[in-house]
Amino acid sequence: MLNEVIAESEQVFHIDGPIQSMSLFLRRLARRDESSPSAGIVIYVHGATFPSALSIAYRFAEGSWRDALCAAGFDVWAFDFYGFGHSARYPEQSQPADANTPLGLASKAAEQLQRVASFVLEHERAARVSFISHSWGALPVGIFAGAHPSWLDRWVMFAPISRRPPRRYEAPASAPAWKAISLEDQWTRFVEDVPAEAPPVLSREEFDGWGLAYLDTDPGSRQRDPPAVNVPLGPFSEVIAAWHGLFPYDPARVQAPTAIIRGEWDGLMTDADARWLFDAMTNAPEKRDVKISRGTHLMHLEAMRQALWRESIAFLTP
Image 1 (tube, helix red, strand yellow):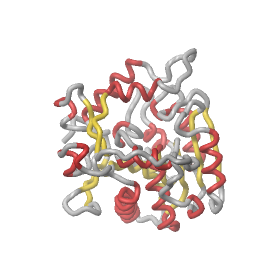
Image 2 (cartoon, rainbow, N blue to C red; image 1 turned 135 degrees about the vertical axis):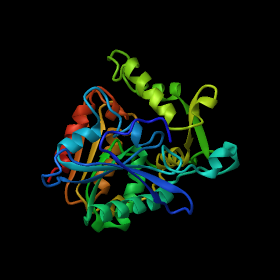
Image 3 (tube, helix red, strand yellow; image 1 turned 30 degrees about the vertical axis):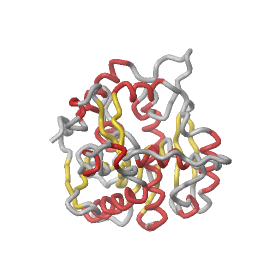
Image 4 (cartoon, rainbow, N blue to C red; image 1 turned 60 degrees about the vertical axis):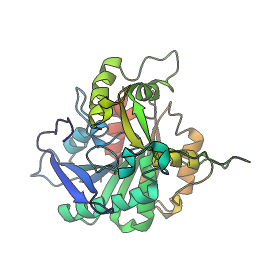
Protein backbone atom coordinates (compact mmCIF):
# COMPACT_ATOMS: atom_id res chain seq x y z
CA MET A 1 0.00 0.00 0.00
CA LEU A 2 1.31 3.44 -0.84
CA ASN A 3 1.96 5.92 1.95
CA GLU A 4 -1.35 7.75 1.65
CA VAL A 5 -3.92 8.82 4.20
CA ILE A 6 -7.29 7.55 3.03
CA ALA A 7 -10.08 10.00 3.82
CA GLU A 8 -12.39 9.03 6.65
CA SER A 9 -15.54 7.40 5.22
CA GLU A 10 -13.87 6.87 1.84
CA GLN A 11 -14.53 3.55 0.15
CA VAL A 12 -11.84 2.00 -2.02
CA PHE A 13 -12.13 -0.73 -4.65
CA HIS A 14 -9.80 -2.75 -6.84
CA ILE A 15 -11.60 -4.02 -9.94
CA ASP A 16 -10.58 -6.10 -12.93
CA GLY A 17 -9.35 -3.94 -15.78
CA PRO A 18 -9.22 -4.69 -19.50
CA ILE A 19 -5.74 -6.26 -19.17
CA GLN A 20 -5.76 -9.64 -17.45
CA SER A 21 -4.24 -9.65 -13.94
CA MET A 22 -3.95 -5.84 -13.91
CA SER A 23 -6.42 -4.19 -11.53
CA LEU A 24 -7.78 -0.65 -11.45
CA PHE A 25 -8.07 1.35 -8.24
CA LEU A 26 -11.24 3.32 -7.49
CA ARG A 27 -12.10 5.61 -4.60
CA ARG A 28 -15.60 6.79 -3.59
CA LEU A 29 -16.65 9.53 -1.21
CA ALA A 30 -20.38 9.87 -0.64
CA ARG A 31 -22.30 13.12 -0.42
CA ARG A 32 -22.15 14.73 3.00
CA ASP A 33 -25.80 14.03 3.85
CA GLU A 34 -26.69 10.58 2.56
CA SER A 35 -30.22 10.93 3.95
CA SER A 36 -30.96 13.53 1.26
CA PRO A 37 -31.25 12.84 -2.48
CA SER A 38 -28.00 12.79 -4.43
CA ALA A 39 -27.26 15.72 -6.74
CA GLY A 40 -25.63 13.24 -9.08
CA ILE A 41 -22.70 10.91 -9.57
CA VAL A 42 -19.34 12.29 -10.69
CA ILE A 43 -16.27 10.39 -11.90
CA TYR A 44 -13.01 12.33 -11.93
CA VAL A 45 -10.52 11.49 -14.70
CA HIS A 46 -6.96 12.58 -13.98
CA GLY A 47 -4.37 13.99 -16.35
CA ALA A 48 -0.95 12.99 -17.61
CA THR A 49 1.40 13.11 -14.64
CA PHE A 50 -0.33 12.48 -11.30
CA PRO A 51 -3.26 10.36 -10.05
CA SER A 52 -6.49 11.07 -8.21
CA ALA A 53 -4.88 11.33 -4.75
CA LEU A 54 -2.88 14.36 -5.91
CA SER A 55 -5.73 16.11 -7.71
CA ILE A 56 -9.41 15.93 -6.79
CA ALA A 57 -8.75 14.14 -3.48
CA TYR A 58 -5.80 16.28 -2.33
CA ARG A 59 -6.73 18.28 0.76
CA PHE A 60 -5.62 21.81 1.50
CA ALA A 61 -6.57 23.69 4.68
CA GLU A 62 -10.05 24.33 3.27
CA GLY A 63 -10.46 20.77 2.01
CA SER A 64 -10.36 19.23 -1.45
CA TRP A 65 -12.28 19.62 -4.68
CA ARG A 66 -13.92 16.31 -3.87
CA ASP A 67 -14.98 17.61 -0.44
CA ALA A 68 -16.63 20.63 -2.09
CA LEU A 69 -18.53 18.37 -4.50
CA CYS A 70 -19.68 16.09 -1.69
CA ALA A 71 -20.85 19.09 0.33
CA ALA A 72 -22.92 20.12 -2.71
CA GLY A 73 -24.67 16.73 -2.68
CA PHE A 74 -22.62 14.71 -5.19
CA ASP A 75 -21.33 11.18 -4.78
CA VAL A 76 -17.77 11.42 -6.09
CA TRP A 77 -15.68 8.68 -7.62
CA ALA A 78 -12.11 8.87 -8.87
CA PHE A 79 -9.70 6.28 -10.18
CA ASP A 80 -6.13 5.82 -11.31
CA PHE A 81 -5.24 4.76 -14.84
CA TYR A 82 -2.80 1.90 -15.28
CA GLY A 83 0.69 3.07 -14.42
CA PHE A 84 -0.49 5.63 -11.84
CA GLY A 85 -1.19 5.66 -8.12
CA HIS A 86 -2.77 2.52 -6.69
CA SER A 87 -3.63 0.91 -10.05
CA ALA A 88 -1.43 -1.78 -11.54
CA ARG A 89 1.85 -0.77 -13.16
CA TYR A 90 2.65 -1.82 -16.71
CA PRO A 91 5.38 -4.48 -16.80
CA GLU A 92 7.17 -2.23 -19.31
CA GLN A 93 7.61 0.40 -16.59
CA SER A 94 10.30 -1.82 -15.06
CA GLN A 95 12.14 -2.02 -18.40
CA PRO A 96 14.33 0.65 -20.01
CA ALA A 97 12.16 3.55 -21.13
CA ASP A 98 13.33 3.40 -24.75
CA ALA A 99 12.65 -0.34 -25.02
CA ASN A 100 8.95 0.17 -25.73
CA THR A 101 6.49 2.58 -27.33
CA PRO A 102 4.55 5.08 -25.18
CA LEU A 103 2.33 3.50 -22.53
CA GLY A 104 -1.20 4.59 -21.66
CA LEU A 105 -2.62 5.89 -24.93
CA ALA A 106 -6.13 7.36 -24.86
CA SER A 107 -7.67 4.50 -26.85
CA LYS A 108 -6.54 2.02 -24.19
CA ALA A 109 -7.34 4.43 -21.36
CA ALA A 110 -10.92 4.66 -22.70
CA GLU A 111 -11.24 0.90 -22.22
CA GLN A 112 -10.23 1.34 -18.58
CA LEU A 113 -12.72 4.18 -18.25
CA GLN A 114 -15.48 1.99 -19.65
CA ARG A 115 -14.76 -0.65 -16.96
CA VAL A 116 -14.80 2.03 -14.27
CA ALA A 117 -18.03 3.65 -15.47
CA SER A 118 -19.76 0.27 -15.73
CA PHE A 119 -18.74 -0.60 -12.17
CA VAL A 120 -19.82 2.79 -10.82
CA LEU A 121 -23.23 2.72 -12.51
CA GLU A 122 -23.89 -0.79 -11.24
CA HIS A 123 -22.75 0.11 -7.72
CA GLU A 124 -24.89 3.27 -7.65
CA ARG A 125 -27.83 1.63 -9.46
CA ALA A 126 -27.84 4.54 -11.87
CA ALA A 127 -28.16 4.95 -15.63
CA ARG A 128 -25.91 7.95 -16.19
CA VAL A 129 -22.83 9.58 -14.72
CA SER A 130 -21.11 12.94 -15.05
CA PHE A 131 -17.40 13.40 -15.62
CA ILE A 132 -14.80 15.91 -14.57
CA SER A 133 -11.63 15.49 -16.61
CA HIS A 134 -8.31 17.29 -16.35
CA SER A 135 -5.99 18.03 -19.27
CA TRP A 136 -5.16 14.88 -21.25
CA GLY A 137 -7.94 13.08 -19.32
CA ALA A 138 -10.41 14.71 -21.72
CA LEU A 139 -9.11 12.52 -24.56
CA PRO A 140 -10.21 9.12 -23.17
CA VAL A 141 -13.46 10.70 -21.96
CA GLY A 142 -14.06 12.02 -25.48
CA ILE A 143 -13.58 8.54 -26.93
CA PHE A 144 -15.87 7.08 -24.26
CA ALA A 145 -18.53 9.76 -24.80
CA GLY A 146 -18.70 8.97 -28.50
CA ALA A 147 -19.03 5.24 -27.86
CA HIS A 148 -21.51 5.46 -24.94
CA PRO A 149 -23.50 8.69 -25.32
CA SER A 150 -26.43 7.45 -23.23
CA TRP A 151 -24.16 6.89 -20.22
CA LEU A 152 -23.01 10.49 -19.99
CA ASP A 153 -25.03 13.07 -18.04
CA ARG A 154 -22.80 16.19 -17.99
CA TRP A 155 -19.10 16.80 -18.59
CA VAL A 156 -16.75 19.36 -17.07
CA MET A 157 -13.58 19.64 -19.15
CA PHE A 158 -11.03 21.32 -16.90
CA ALA A 159 -8.05 22.60 -18.95
CA PRO A 160 -8.69 20.07 -21.74
CA ILE A 161 -6.23 19.31 -24.49
CA SER A 162 -7.49 20.59 -27.83
CA ARG A 163 -6.47 20.11 -31.45
CA ARG A 164 -4.14 22.56 -33.15
CA PRO A 165 -3.59 22.76 -36.92
CA PRO A 166 -1.09 20.39 -38.56
CA ARG A 167 2.43 21.75 -38.86
CA ARG A 168 3.63 21.84 -42.42
CA TYR A 169 6.54 19.49 -43.13
CA GLU A 170 6.62 18.43 -39.48
CA ALA A 171 5.51 15.26 -37.73
CA PRO A 172 5.25 14.76 -33.95
CA ALA A 173 8.39 13.36 -32.38
CA SER A 174 8.37 9.82 -31.02
CA ALA A 175 8.47 9.25 -27.28
CA PRO A 176 9.71 6.44 -25.01
CA ALA A 177 7.42 4.25 -22.92
CA TRP A 178 7.74 6.22 -19.70
CA LYS A 179 9.59 9.04 -18.00
CA ALA A 180 10.72 9.73 -14.43
CA ILE A 181 9.26 13.11 -13.39
CA SER A 182 10.96 14.84 -10.45
CA LEU A 183 9.69 17.40 -7.97
CA GLU A 184 11.62 20.09 -9.80
CA ASP A 185 9.89 19.08 -13.04
CA GLN A 186 6.52 19.51 -11.33
CA TRP A 187 7.46 22.82 -9.70
CA THR A 188 8.39 24.17 -13.12
CA ARG A 189 4.88 23.37 -14.31
CA PHE A 190 3.41 25.50 -11.51
CA VAL A 191 5.50 28.57 -12.28
CA GLU A 192 6.28 28.56 -16.01
CA ASP A 193 3.07 30.27 -17.17
CA VAL A 194 2.71 32.76 -14.31
CA PRO A 195 3.70 36.29 -15.40
CA ALA A 196 6.94 37.49 -13.80
CA GLU A 197 5.23 40.42 -12.05
CA ALA A 198 2.40 38.29 -10.60
CA PRO A 199 2.39 36.71 -7.13
CA PRO A 200 2.82 32.91 -6.97
CA VAL A 201 -0.28 30.82 -7.58
CA LEU A 202 0.97 28.12 -5.18
CA SER A 203 3.23 28.72 -2.20
CA ARG A 204 6.44 26.76 -1.91
CA GLU A 205 5.23 25.46 1.45
CA GLU A 206 2.03 24.09 -0.10
CA PHE A 207 4.01 22.60 -2.97
CA ASP A 208 6.46 20.89 -0.60
CA GLY A 209 3.58 19.11 1.13
CA TRP A 210 2.03 18.16 -2.19
CA GLY A 211 5.44 17.03 -3.46
CA LEU A 212 5.95 14.54 -0.63
CA ALA A 213 2.53 13.05 -1.38
CA TYR A 214 3.42 12.99 -5.07
CA LEU A 215 6.53 10.90 -4.41
CA ASP A 216 4.41 8.53 -2.33
CA THR A 217 2.37 7.62 -5.43
CA ASP A 218 5.31 5.56 -6.76
CA PRO A 219 6.94 3.06 -4.36
CA GLY A 220 10.22 3.35 -6.29
CA SER A 221 10.36 7.15 -6.44
CA ARG A 222 12.88 7.67 -3.64
CA GLN A 223 15.25 5.09 -5.08
CA ARG A 224 15.96 7.42 -8.01
CA ASP A 225 18.39 10.34 -7.98
CA PRO A 226 16.78 12.81 -7.82
CA PRO A 227 13.60 11.24 -6.46
CA ALA A 228 11.07 10.99 -9.28
CA VAL A 229 7.83 9.27 -10.25
CA ASN A 230 7.66 6.82 -13.15
CA VAL A 231 4.92 8.10 -15.47
CA PRO A 232 3.60 6.51 -18.70
CA LEU A 233 4.33 8.76 -21.69
CA GLY A 234 1.36 7.85 -23.86
CA PRO A 235 -0.50 10.94 -22.60
CA PHE A 236 2.42 13.27 -23.31
CA SER A 237 2.88 11.82 -26.80
CA GLU A 238 -0.82 12.40 -27.54
CA VAL A 239 -0.69 16.00 -26.39
CA ILE A 240 2.14 16.61 -28.86
CA ALA A 241 0.23 14.72 -31.57
CA ALA A 242 -2.89 16.85 -30.93
CA TRP A 243 -0.76 19.95 -31.47
CA HIS A 244 0.24 18.51 -34.85
CA GLY A 245 -3.36 18.04 -35.97
CA LEU A 246 -3.80 14.41 -34.81
CA PHE A 247 -6.77 14.14 -32.45
CA PRO A 248 -8.05 10.82 -31.02
CA TYR A 249 -11.78 11.58 -30.87
CA ASP A 250 -14.47 13.50 -32.73
CA PRO A 251 -15.96 16.27 -30.52
CA ALA A 252 -19.09 16.25 -32.69
CA ARG A 253 -19.98 12.86 -31.20
CA VAL A 254 -20.33 14.35 -27.70
CA GLN A 255 -24.07 14.62 -26.99
CA ALA A 256 -24.01 15.78 -23.36
CA PRO A 257 -23.95 19.28 -21.88
CA THR A 258 -20.28 20.24 -21.68
CA ALA A 259 -18.32 23.01 -19.99
CA ILE A 260 -14.74 24.03 -20.74
CA ILE A 261 -13.24 25.60 -17.61
CA ARG A 262 -9.72 27.01 -17.88
CA GLY A 263 -7.28 29.44 -16.38
CA GLU A 264 -6.30 32.83 -17.76
CA TRP A 265 -2.62 31.81 -17.81
CA ASP A 266 -3.00 28.27 -19.15
CA GLY A 267 -0.40 27.86 -21.89
CA LEU A 268 -1.74 24.41 -22.82
CA MET A 269 -5.36 25.56 -23.31
CA THR A 270 -5.29 28.92 -25.05
CA ASP A 271 -8.20 31.03 -26.27
CA ALA A 272 -7.71 29.59 -29.76
CA ASP A 273 -7.67 26.04 -28.38
CA ALA A 274 -10.91 26.64 -26.48
CA ARG A 275 -12.53 28.22 -29.54
CA TRP A 276 -11.78 25.19 -31.73
CA LEU A 277 -13.03 22.70 -29.16
CA PHE A 278 -16.16 24.71 -28.35
CA ASP A 279 -17.06 25.05 -32.04
CA ALA A 280 -16.27 21.38 -32.78
CA MET A 281 -18.82 20.16 -30.22
CA THR A 282 -21.69 20.69 -32.62
CA ASN A 283 -24.05 18.20 -30.96
CA ALA A 284 -23.64 19.16 -27.32
CA PRO A 285 -27.06 20.54 -26.25
CA GLU A 286 -25.43 23.04 -23.88
CA LYS A 287 -21.90 24.45 -23.98
CA ARG A 288 -19.96 26.84 -21.79
CA ASP A 289 -16.46 28.27 -22.01
CA VAL A 290 -15.43 29.67 -18.64
CA LYS A 291 -12.09 31.43 -18.15
CA ILE A 292 -10.93 32.12 -14.58
CA SER A 293 -8.38 34.80 -13.77
CA ARG A 294 -4.94 34.02 -12.32
CA GLY A 295 -5.11 30.32 -13.12
CA THR A 296 -2.74 28.04 -15.01
CA HIS A 297 -3.06 24.47 -16.28
CA LEU A 298 -2.93 23.26 -12.66
CA MET A 299 -5.52 25.66 -11.27
CA HIS A 300 -7.19 22.90 -9.21
CA LEU A 301 -4.17 23.11 -6.88
CA GLU A 302 -3.59 26.87 -7.03
CA ALA A 303 -4.82 30.05 -5.36
CA MET A 304 -7.92 30.20 -7.61
CA ARG A 305 -8.88 26.58 -7.01
CA GLN A 306 -12.09 27.39 -5.15
CA ALA A 307 -13.34 29.43 -8.11
CA LEU A 308 -12.80 26.35 -10.28
CA TRP A 309 -14.60 24.18 -7.76
CA ARG A 310 -17.58 26.58 -7.67
CA GLU A 311 -17.85 26.76 -11.46
CA SER A 312 -17.76 22.98 -11.79
CA ILE A 313 -20.45 22.53 -9.13
CA ALA A 314 -22.65 25.19 -10.74
CA PHE A 315 -22.50 23.43 -14.10
CA LEU A 316 -23.05 19.93 -12.71
CA THR A 317 -25.93 20.88 -10.43
CA PRO A 318 -29.29 19.92 -12.00
